[in-house]
Length: 186
Image 1 (tube, one colour):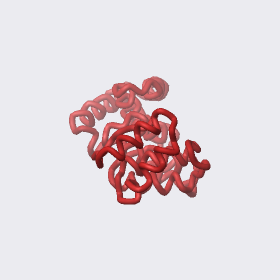
Image 2: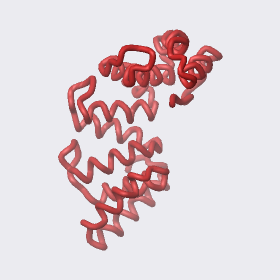
Image 3: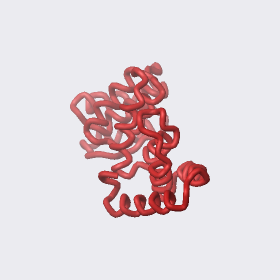
Image 4: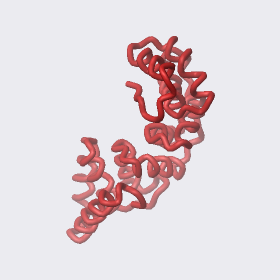
C-alpha cells in the first residue's frame, strides 16, 4: 500500500510505515506527521495517500495535494505521479492538464511506469496539456509496458493501429534511446 522510498529518518518512519501497512492509521499519522513537517518526502507522500483515500483521517483532496506537492518537489516519483493525477482530474487542485503533464514527465523520467502510461495517454488524446502525437504515445506506452504496466501495452497496441510503418519505427527507436538515457530528456 504505502512505500518506503526516500531516506529513512530512523525508526519513527519505519514504525509509521509498518503501522500504515497494517491498517493502524492512528499510529501512522502520529509517527509520520512530525517527520513530514520536518521535510521527510516519504512521510509527506504517505500522508498524501492517507488524506487522498481517507485512511485514518477525513478524506481531503486539497490536503492530500498539499502533502503530495511537498514530496513531489523533493523528486518523490510516486508523489509526482499522484499529483499529476490530481491536476489531470481536478481533485484538490484546479484542473490543469499542462501541470499534470509536467508532473507525469518528472515521474516518468524516474522510471515510474504509471506516469509513463499517463504521459502516453495524454499524447494519445492530445487535448490534455500536450500536442496529440502517436509516436510519443506509442513510445511512452511501450516503455510503461516494459516496466510492468499492462495498460501501457494496451495503449501501445491501440495507437499502433493509427500509425504508419515509419512512425512505428520512429517510436520504437525513440523508446530504445529513452531507455538508454534512463528516461531523461525523452
